[in-house]
Length: 181
Image 1 (cartoon, rainbow, N blue to C red):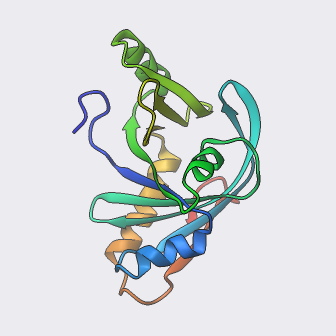
Image 2: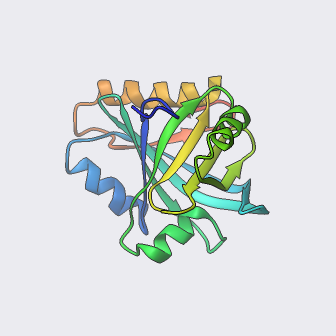
């Protein structure tokens, strides 16, 4: 467990083709995957405002969430940058819960940890990279009811999955809350 962040709760893989990425995990008995598409989702990348378009799919293996991400356009994001360096895709980030992203960043700065904020989705998610030795990023995820509900839906899906039926399921956010469609 990290002394700065606590236990890892998510492994995030960026891939060039989300369906191939999902199949990789399904062949290993991990699933089902819950798929969502984000269109024109506001973010800040290296201090610049952008609109992110991506597909993300979530599954569980035990208490570890597996996230598979595909950038849907050429917008400058940490996902696109990762694929430019790693065209086959791979482990891009480790995710951790936090109660307050801004407070966590202040603590890291106080410890002179050498982390740089690379991409931020307001106060919900932030990606940090190490300045002197970049590599697998850290994603801090603010605990909120909607994100925790999404995680519960995915985890319950994994616990009740028979290993074959409905391996890919949609997440519907039209109500403002995640619902398995």
